[in-house]
Image (cartoon, rainbow, N blue to C red; front, top):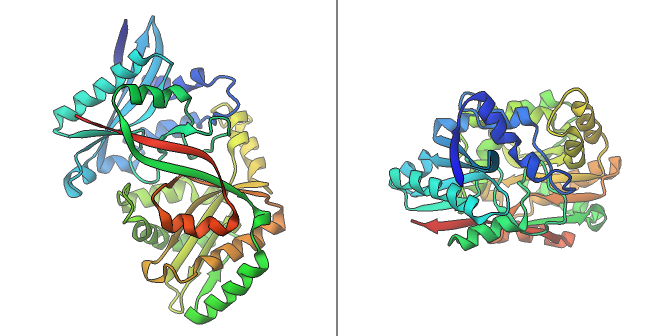
Length: 372
């Protein structure tokens, strides 16, 4: 018999967050979250996403053991302002028992009906900056700190329950050796002269901070046309600034400004923390922090996190400036491989952007939709 329990207390939420550790124990490809940070993400007192969204957290219990979990999420900005009657679900993990998935999804459907929503989509988080999708291929590749890993039965369960493909995302990687640094430097200089632009490089985090709010404004402009778009609020910007910017190597953030010192493009990459996070086993202390700090220093693999260009400058080669600056920085410290975060299959602009680097699609992930 399978029963559901809603989790809300600190002890219960810790159980919710730690459940995947049992599923993925000894799995060489799963990258665990830092438990403390994951708890903060799911806490309405900490995460400003809850200003426009609500979430309820459930686990499935069988024979006295937790065997599955799910978060039922409503983004009220999406529902009320964008008129999208979507019930989101995320943090979906289950053992290979279709009855467990059915019980969890039925609970999400029940909440959707109570709120007059017309369809489910998931796995997704609160916004564009959260993790997304279940893997449909690439199960034998290590995950990243900003993606969910999943086993083949996740997608199989959803399809058996009547879900159909909603959005598909590609994950690609390429070797830095494929980037012709000299070519991009020539093009960069040409574009800089033509449009009176200047690249900004940094060695200190404090020098980046004055530009971060403007960067997120540009992020909203860049991604507003994508089908998954939900705006990022000022408080969410402050949250992400505090949580992430200070931990990213300053030389891994590149900005481009115009003659009036207005930000027109940015790129953010991060060291790959995947293997370091596996060593932490979900905890920063006593030794986890040292694994992360070691990974931050002179990494050979980096993850491309975000790139954005002011709409009026798109298709004018501005990204050549960003690529040129990254190429110089990465060659100096010995970076070999660049892994890209999930990109929508139908985002042709971003695929065109990267195609000259001979990227390899090593993973695909998907969100699923169910009408109710």
